[in-house]
Image 1 (tube, one colour):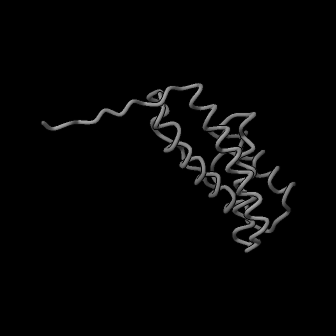
Image 2 (cartoon, rainbow, N blue to C red):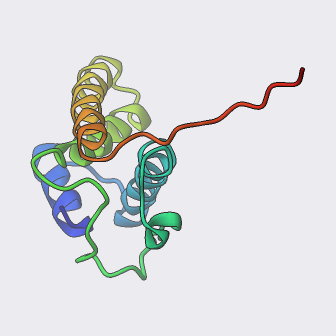
Image 3 (spheres, one colour):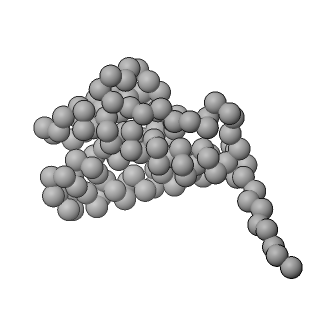
Amino acid sequence: MTIQKALDLADELKPNMMSRQTKIHFLDEIDKMIHGELVMTHEHTAAEETVSSYDTDTDEGTELIIPGPYDMLYVYWLMSKIDELNQETDKYNNDRARFETEYEQASDWWTRRRHPLQRTREFML
């Protein structure tokens, strides 16, 4: 899913007055979280060591980290952030629960696709 598609779909499903800049910031936030929690904790290439930052100057055709069919997590993330800032608690809880389900499925897929890194511990005798 691209930045533009995530923004457009979230706006279609949850009409809002939030700026595009703020929503791009939220996509930047979630991709950095995904990078730290999934990419860097599993086998990855040297090119994947860094994560790009998104802002209003970023090409909205840029692909987000998680591909389909697991990419709806981005839309639910945006929807939950909109609800949170609008102080719509019930809607937030529903969208956040959907996000958590989508994120868990994406995480499971990531782990099936790439082996988790083995952490070694040092023991002193």
